[in-house]
Image (tube, rainbow, N blue to C red; front, top):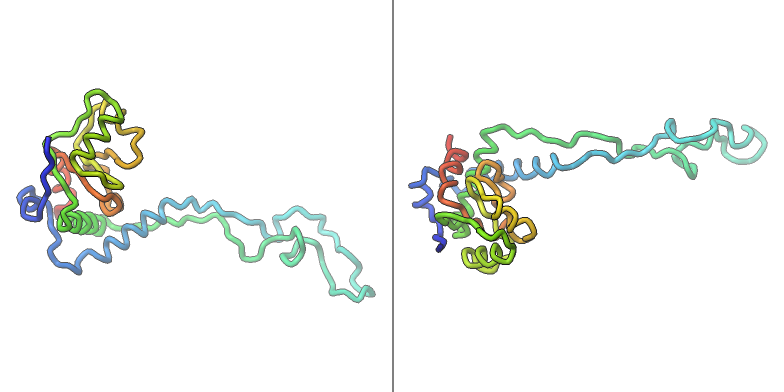
Length: 205
């Protein structure tokens, strides 16, 4: 089983929408990546204000006669153990990106990787014995010894998934689930030919 480099002409023949304008889609890729990173943030950072910290509410000392500045309690921010002024509160960091922008970003990212010669196609990808050693050998034979390999297919057998489970340098993913960030992150992308139709549908208008 040999891998072939997918070029722009072959991609067009497979009905993959190619973004030919070098400037088109750059902002869309940026917006999508920023939104994906923002959507992963939990937004759970939380601090207590002076009203929320545990305290007696009693004046620490009398109002007059001590020579010190008047204090109404021990909970203000300038006291040790007091509340936090303008500290973080739980919030939603998520950003929304419309469908056409996501589609354009996906097409742009895929176009760039194809143009760079980093997308390979194979007729099939399967590891029959379910062993990680066999999986790594097969990936190296296809893509060479690179840092990260993304393998995109329509579906994979249980044995293949089991073989890939312990391999940190490669990821199996379906053509319906692969996203823009993954297309840009991995050093090489191996696409099973049966998944080209799905990728073409995701890049079409």
